[in-house]
Length: 302
View 1 (tube, rainbow, N blue to C red):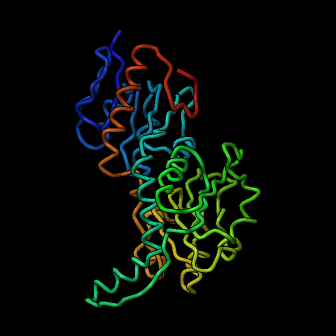
View 2 (tube, helix red, strand yellow):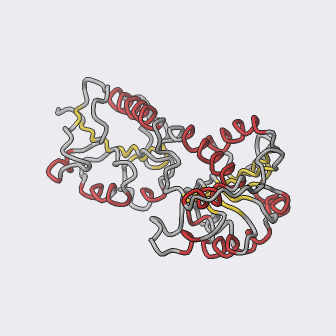
View 3 (tube, rainbow, N blue to C red):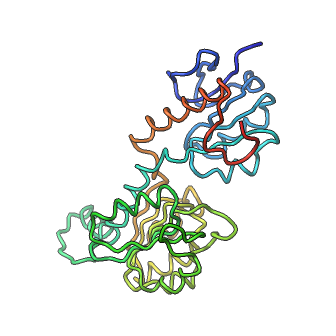
């Protein structure tokens, strides 16, 4: 029997001796090896193209996504294939960017950077993160880490989750408490329920001068409503994701005031590579030795 075969863009993986790793020919697997791949790690941060080869992988058994969110893969997951996500891999990078965006938006960084580009010294007072009431919508691994890290910033944190476990509020409490929050951080999966969670009505209900931070998916915010609220000075915002994405050059979000946009880099920092490599190595070891895979999202348990 031939060795089980895996494909990953990460060279030099320390893997079980019974596994075969196809040599890298580039960013994507070569067409002639697709039907042999049994364990596939889609290339990171390249969009839909990473998923295009899956339909030609007739021997595929496992997809180990390098992303925590896998809603795009679920739509095209072949029958009988196990899908695992990268839960935990992005926590450190994403949480620090969430806090960085919150601080930057509240302290007026968009204005200061615009002034800097024009060589203008303009002293202004802006809101602090300190003494703020911060709502975190989505209290999974990353949301919980953000909450713990915020303890050092003299803030009150209110977590919102579907279950309301571990002292968090349920989403039914969100509308009542929203007008009292100084910062709202979104870090929840995109679903039918969360699509446009922050719609025009909720954005208008936010406390004047409050800050909205989106580390989740762009479509959780109604983009047109966000643009309108920013342009009239109702709120400030920091967003790592947009709808649409990538954001077209002439999109009104680019010119909206009081806004910081980062191009979906929340999980992609120097902290990513060692963590994702460790996950892949652990998973292929489990795959080779018949141990249960972790982070299984869909498909048969293996």
